[in-house]
Image 1 (cartoon, one colour):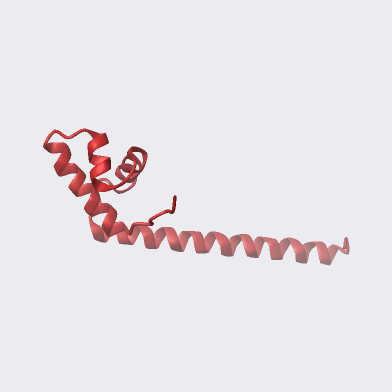
Image 2 (image 1 turned 135 degrees about the horizontal axis):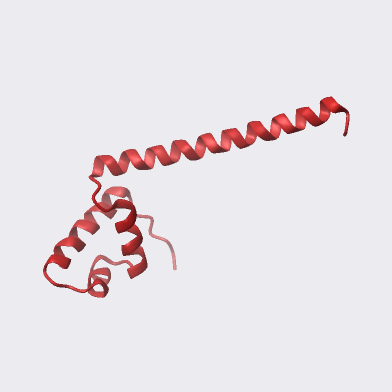
Length: 92
């Protein structure tokens, strides 16, 4: 099954819809089916995005993207350093 890849705004809107249904007494199984995701996905989204506003979710995603970019940069630089150190010692 293909992954749909919802945006942060779509996730927050679906969670808001789920909260409305939950307040009306619907079960999690019914709510999950209504918003078109599995129970597991609903709980994961609620854990990650519960209580966030759309602006906060956008900022969170941009920070996660920047963090991943910086981690990759550090890994590349560490690898370069190790290669240069080995070459300087003459162990090649």
